[in-house]
Length: 147
Image (cartoon, rainbow, N blue to C red; front, side):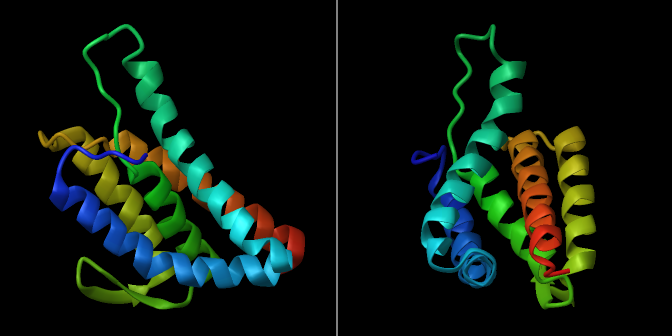
């Protein structure tokens, strides 16, 4: 999660991480109080590991496959934010919309890109990290009554 295949992708990931991590940290402060910074780090790392898991399983017998990138972790943060603040207006591909609509579009877009794109981007990692982020934040919202 500390390496990346190209500078453009890591720059975009870090921009997205910067855009959504502050708001998600506020959600963590509300739900877990002073443990928020530690929860954020664990959330990020776990999102990254969840993002890598399907790829490592898929390519387990391919010694030439390299799994690098922060995409699963960044997707967990992004979708986690959208689930934490579903009515917040965000820009999705520069189009303003409520976050709850952007979540659906995120998954649809990633699935289509996974199926049709020829770019060297691990869309499975985006999807798996996002699923982790969505499930984790939904559980926290229900557990704390922040629904």
